[in-house]
Amino acid sequence: TNNILESLENGTAPWRCPWDKDIQLEAPTNGHTGRQYNGVNFAYLLAAQNDCRFTANRWFTFKQAKANGGKIRKGEKGTKAVFFKTIEKEREEVTINGEPVIDYIPMAKQYTIFNIDQIEGIEDDEEPAPFNPVTDAEQLIKSSGVPLTHAGAQAYYRPDADTITMPEASRFGNAEDYYATALHELVHSTKQSHRCDRQPYSDNRDTAYAFEELVAELGSVFLMAQIGLSSQVENHDSYIANWASLLKNDKRAFFKASAKAQQAVDWILEQANEKDEAA
Image (cartoon, rainbow, N blue to C red; front, side, top):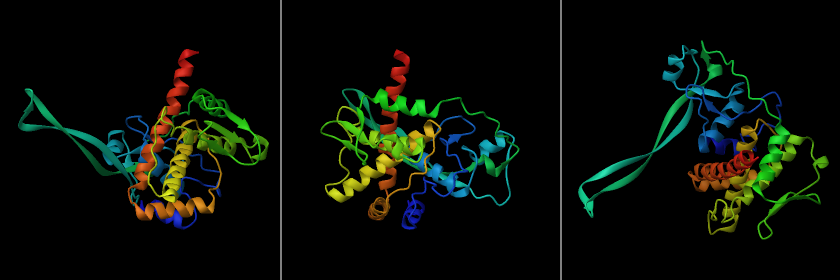
């Protein structure tokens, strides 16, 4: 949170890179298991890749790098990630109707990982899966069932009508910026009760608004990386100021927003997968 906050106070959302088009941010993945990181790890590793100018999205622990024949380069500094797990513990000598009572204990543990750019002996020879980025983005929007219309010069989601309104695509500098904005609004739509049922973060209107905008922003970034698109959309100064204030007042807010964003992304991707299977 402190690292994210420092970037926000400097006027930049660290998952955006408007000044450098050479870095293509892709969904961060564990190079050993092949599993994609999610939640706060997804957002933080994207920011780390951007900040450190890493060219790859594959990450390894020290042991995983060694197991794959690699060696961490001397002087390289690792990146922190968080491992979440729920531990089941049976209460001693306590039963209900003869059945043991189970306590579910959440655990979070910090560990260190290294980007493949920091490792010798492992070649990053994986070819990206073929895809049509624009088609994939359109599919995410259409399969959600949320109507999208084009009118005016503002992008917004209207909860009472459950519709997204976007400016015409020609108003945007490129397709990536258009879809980053459209997916931002699509994440907003998942707060409806029949989707993710995302409740207001706070009774304070300004705080709740800042949190919801952070969820939508992270969700858009997650989705863009998921389908292999990157955008140079810059966040408005007021958004960044609100997010900085939010993180100052609650050090867990970024974790909470990342989790809510991941939930929204999972729902959107699930709708797209169901439409593909039906087709």
